[in-house]
Image 1 (cartoon, rainbow over the protein chains, first blue to last red):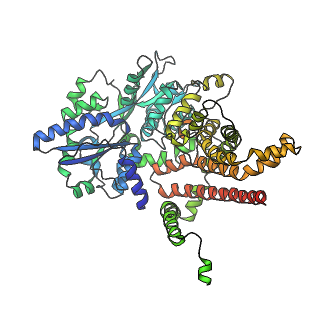
Image 2 (image 1 turned 45 degrees about the vertical axis):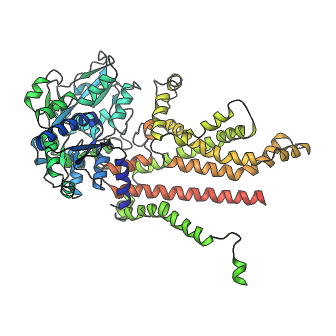
Image 3 (image 1 turned 180 degrees about the vertical axis):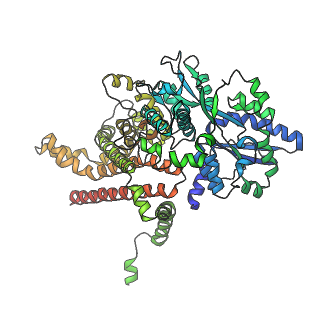
Length: 334
Length: 276
């Protein structure tokens, strides 16, 4: 990596900070787009907890952007104490850059994902097309909205949810899954570059019959246009696990390891779980989950490890150049 | 003394030239030199495979083609705007004049979102157009619309001062000598405007080739159809494929440079013809 891209990326990422007045110790949490409100609330809660526990004042800065772009900024020198990204693949890339240990995902409970989400359908009020399950998306004449999995980490989960669901249908096979996903993407009229863009396309431009979205994003969309949309939770979907990690090289250099580790562990505490649940992320803590059971419809969930053998493999098979996703659009297949 | 004879009228050539070279190196040359440096970390076969991928080739064609069409549209209508602003005075002229610069100042993503909202099938302009079977947003037409928007000020701002410099007396003299209107336009006005007009076209074209922010929102990003080259660079970066990304960028850079060089050559030629 050349130092110029490094500087530019760091400068860009810096411009996204929410700056907090100077404090005894500061942490930088580099995160992805939709977690802005979640971490605003959580940071305040953690600062109170840390002050009460150690007497230290800790200020937390947050930076948000596309998950992949944020990971690149960290690799190129943005001093993130912790990263809280949309997919393990992006933190793996930081690990490959040598900034944290390869076994990072084993260091915290639940695959280092303190909260989860899943991929649901957002439809127009009254569900005029009667969409209930993944196989309903195979019906001719539908328009489906999802972002480009090549540029959006969130959209990669959507793609894998569709594939995994088709695989688990009675009589499902790799061949059938491939056909289902190909057909699905041929019904996508607009491949926005990010998940938020897809939501705008569906909600504001009123294009498409169904939007594939993360559950927490779906709730946000509903709040922003009350009375126009509905969430349909399919009986089966993927368990989206957005992971968190302490960036070893950075915390050791800055001497912030204790606070950074406590920060991530506090995400698993009842208070941290409650904040996540309020922001429509599914909590791991069974007590908090029970409290919010009405929000989170029960469904069967499969993990990326079960269905695809992990992110590295999924990325290589499906999203790398020339992979399955690219083949859908190869000339002559349309 | 021979030494004194070579002296310039204005002092400070050594200093300004030094600053020029340093400044150009820091701002343009060194950043651009990192492109081939990064691209050539990959093997020649991999480089060739990357840049000749059908999807990449389609995106080059789209980026260059749409930029050319948009620059051509601006060259025609931008000159009319420049002429109107330079030659006529009308109420609100200053406001119109200030409006021209807005595409310079507006963040391109904002422009992209606004244009998409306007031209989407549910939008103010998109809905009536859709009823006539014309789709703008999420098609190549939409890409051209965005590129016309961001390119307009380049043509207007290059032509406007040149038109203001043109002395209407010359046109009047030609008319009084019996030249018809078209002849005045063709033989008197156009030759004087041509070099600036080409510069405006080249600037608008160059700006449009690399445009990303506004286009990604309106293009729909469909592989093989509405994927611009800068988007493919982004998708490579998303896979941490820096070499692949720079390979695409390098080819874009070379194509643009060759085209701009050709336009500059054309411009020099027309200028020689005009000034005799």
